[in-house]
Image (tube, one colour):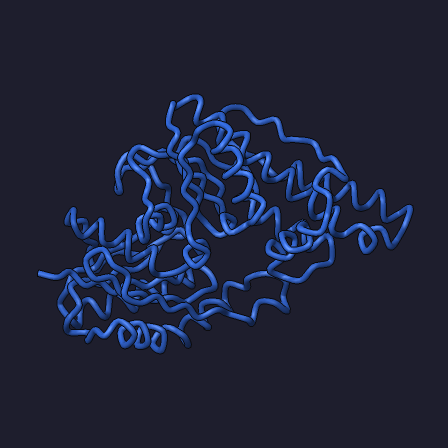
Length: 335
């Protein structure tokens, strides 16, 4: 019997729905929220309200694009966490109601595990075990993946996530939200070695970006006191130098993880995996060190329901279903 799952993602500010049949994605619809730009970041209350407006049209379109009727669905999946609680509640409540109405199983998916399993949407796919660097606005983690449902966090950020550090740096530079992609864009025109920032010294495989963020703030304050047009004159070089430092922090820890585990199958996932400098540096490192590297397609880097659907596919095969008493959770560890 063909397994057809409708998946819903609503962990932050994108409302998304996707349909997967067996292991093939048949639709992946995403509604973005423009309302947050004027506030310089995601406003949780506005995000949850926008999810309420978007979820029915998005689910309807996902089903129509896939050519699937609700009564043909085998299960309903949703992101349970981690994320913004109000946003998660919209997706979880909708999924519960639909699963109850259709009398089919409910599957609760871990958002960060889904980012990792997005690598199985399209070939080539990594072999187990592999290491995955998950990088987003809310998370920076090094994860050992031994099976689709067997993951262990080897290291994570002790403070800011790298995506958050990108956005906060962009704000210091006077760039609009979301600033991470803008830093990437300006960096392509700059010299990554124009300015030097200190590398964080953190034991083990953990990360820290708060000190680096402070050093960038001090650097900008020092130079703008001497020349109020400093940022305007040197924006590409500043962006390139900051981005280079962030990428080196990530690669340094990833290389350390490869040495410690002996695993040379390496993947990246999460919104920051769309960063062009990180993708290029990882490819270069792979060629030098003999790693086998996996980088997701751009449409599967940022939050989307296709990755939730793929995770749900693996959970369905294992009979890993949720109770209708399941609740959304803002914090949820991988292991």
